[in-house]
Amino acid sequence: MTPLSFDDIEVGDTLPPLTLAPVDRTTLALFAGASGDHNAVHIDLDFARRAGMPDVFAHGMLSMAWLGRLLTLWTDQRNLRHFGVRFVGITQLGHRITCSGRVVDKSEANGERLVKVEIQTTSQYGEPRVLGDASIAL
Image 1 (tube, rainbow, N blue to C red):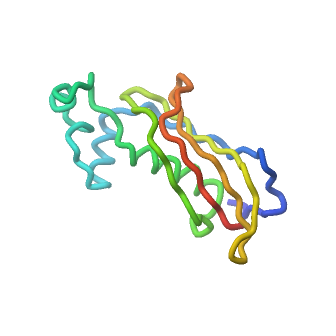
Image 2 (tube, one colour):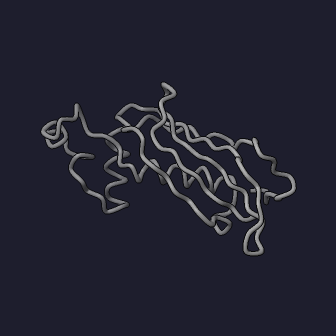
């Protein structure tokens, strides 16, 4: 990874998109094990149906993890100063998620030069699933 330079980054620049394989049951089971989040709505079809859902669906924090990967493919994780999201849609089985980001501000605070990026996940249909932002010191 080539280190980013504050002076080389411009408002409007985009991060290289990250497109993931379609969400499947194996991914959900592996994430449940890795995260310790064994909420049945994500891994048990019968439970999900009793909850009114057509099938299991992805953990929100899995989508946040994918956005974390987008950021750390762009810059070293030690540069991350803030990373927050809000969940705006459900990621269903079969969704092919793309993570993207765009530089929206450059500033200086507390002796650091910061770049603010807006980030999101979208389904293959262009529907947003998770929206967020991050501040990165460069």
